[in-house]
Amino acid sequence: MPTCYTMALAGIWHGAGWQYLIYGVLHAAYLTVNHAWRAWRAGAPAAATPASGFAKRVRHAGNVLLTFAAALVAFAFFRAHGVGDALALLQGMAGLRGIEAPDWPAWGAAGMNLADWLHLVAGRSTLALLIVLLLAIVWCAPNSHQLMGRFSPALERAADDARALTWRPSMRWTLAMLGVLVFCVAQLHGEVRFLYFQF
Figure 1 (cartoon, helix red, strand yellow):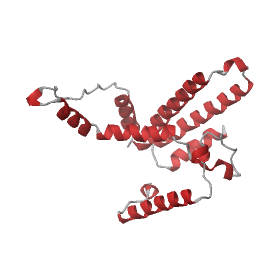
Figure 2 (cartoon, helix red, strand yellow):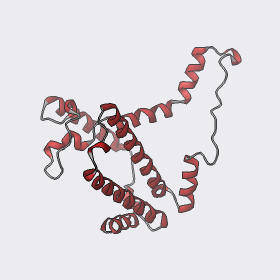
Figure 3 (spheres, one colour):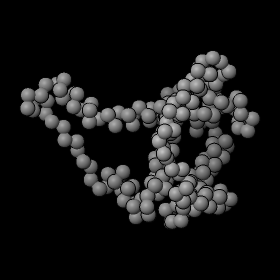
Figure 4 (cartoon, helix red, strand yellow):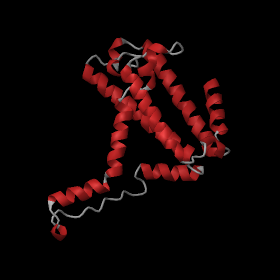
């Protein structure tokens, strides 16, 4: 129950509206299910855990996709102006409001050859390709805990899956951090309103 109270209050803290309460309650439900699942797995027989590497990878990919989908549902309520808008958005995401097929021209239409057609498709698909690239980075790259886990006294040590990318005091990491710093400073010219000033 403390998790439910805390996450519900965290949702309401973000704004006055039922959609923010639902956002918080959904996160409370997700955390409760996660804790219950971990407790069950700790006492489950060894036969319930996949033994082969392929089965473990498939299970991990399923867990990642399930978590991603659950977070998308919750953030639909966070982003919407009301509960009705969030439900309409979720219906659209699930394809319940119809699916629009892309209107690609035929290869031979208007004298278009294969190279022209591929150039047109790539131009129209730039945003989709960028989304796929960013999702690949989010899903496949190590997170900050994996990068800095051995230096954090407050969290349990991360699995050493990202040995090549683990942070170490070195010239390579110094240059990488300076590059990130320069990029961030270069973005300061635009005026961006702080998110929580809107609430």
